[in-house]
Amino acid sequence: MPHAVLPMRSPAARDAARRLPGAAAAVLALALLAACGNGDAAGRDPATRSAVATGVAVTPSPEGAAPGPSGPPAASSVSANPATAGGARSSTSKPPASTAAKSPAASTASQTAQAPVPAPVPDVLGAAYADAAARLTAAGFTVVRVDAVSAKPQGTVTATSPASGTQAAKGTRVTVTVAKPDTAVVPDIMNKSYRDATATVRAAGLVMDQDSVDHAANPVWNRCYVVAFTPPAGTVVAKGSLVDITRVYGCG
Image (cartoon, rainbow, N blue to C red):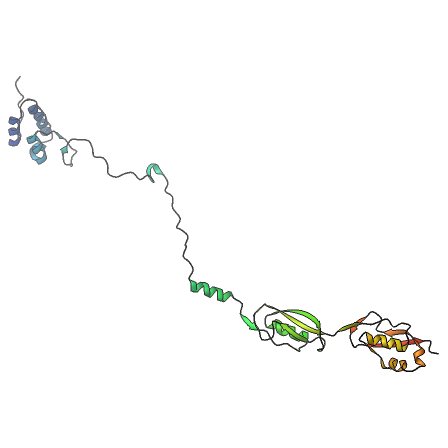
């Protein structure tokens, strides 16, 4: 069977055709026909001329793209992002909470600012309780009163705790000791003679009125019996208080 006569526009193509026998020549002929159909691209494209010369089939490429050997497409080197694939929402992570420690100097300054400021306890010894309490309160202290028997004038301050002049934080409780007299209970001297009544009152730490004392020394008056006196029996009074006989009977 006679071979088809193909146009050989390129000398290199004609030389390759002459060197390729049989089936290889047929493949080359088909390639040349395709090149002729593309408007003489085979004659102008160096890559086509090289493929024809070597007997490698050339796959026509789209317009504007360089032709190359046929083969499987290269795998994409860019992998899909699993976080955004399929329209998945990406989560926004919150920034970690600050763990920076406070400056030691700042902490010390804060503690100093919050610490109570100490102040000296005012000297109120010998003052009346009302005046002493007012001065202590004005200095920022809390006053607590305690009464105690004392030979000092009644109602005056005999001691403070903390003591006067002591440095103490404002708001500190200051215990104020206030003098009170020693007490005694008025005895019952009803129906006693002046002499017996006087002795009983003195034994209780109290004082009998002078008229009653004088009557107790008189034999005539000493025959009288007490029927009224003041303060009444059972009254608590300061020791040394006066008991006065106000009425007697049976003196004759």
